Length: 239
Ligand SMILES: Nc1ncnc2c1ncn2[C@@H]1O[C@H](COP(=O)(O)OP(=O)(O)O)[C@@H](O)[C@H]1O
Ligand SMILES: [Mg+2]
Image (tube, rainbow, N blue to C red; front, side):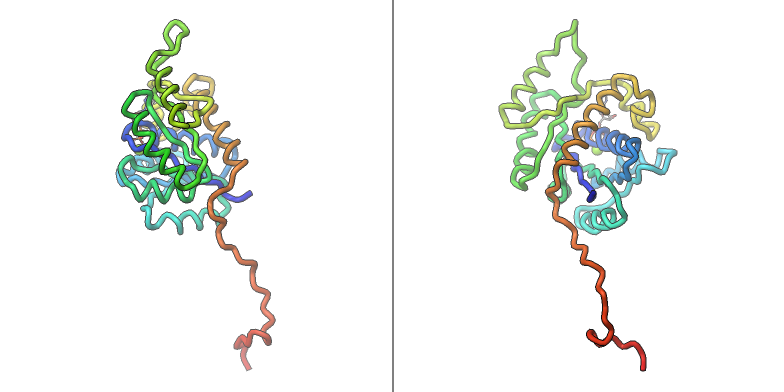
């Protein structure tokens, strides 16, 4: 199977792009996939996470929008199964190049009016490039007495009205996320049975299923190795 590419996008800082991209990179690696996490954010938070991490996998590399395509091609040729692109909130070029290469765009959104409003911009970018997307609600407040809070209900309704496709699983605001980030690990590596880990596993299951079913990125040019007949092509093979 050819390499799949996931772009993690949000035009709001702090929404949870790096949290999701590092977490999903670990989910992929735990599933036995060869995953590479590419940090396109000049703040290099994913790279910091990678340096903090004791385990060398998944691979984390930093690059810029202009150099992304060669990095992507090299990973594909090296037999990677999945590339995750962590993008900055502000940079137009990084988000655009990430979306162009993506088979699926994961839009991260907190349940508040500003994030929900800003999601339109990301959705427009993704749709103009003809790419499928999935919106993950992150940092959702806990249920109270079994009831979803009003902000979550409103965010879901507004996102659906924008034509957004919501992920089956969202992430709640949980202390395990910053704790894992500080240790260069994923919440799944703290305890796979705890709620934060189950949420990440839920997002991963849906993301990987969609990625396996889709391939929209340009197929890299991989010409068949030439079978030279030296005399025909006039190769200088010596006297
Ligand atoms: N579900 C969550 N629960 C608690 N804290 C979170 C959650 N998601 C992200 N955070 C924290 O919020 C901050 C911003 O998240 P980050 O992933 O860096 O956002 P972004 O990459 O979109 O700027 C980090 O400190 C991170 O640990
Ligand atoms: Mg980030």
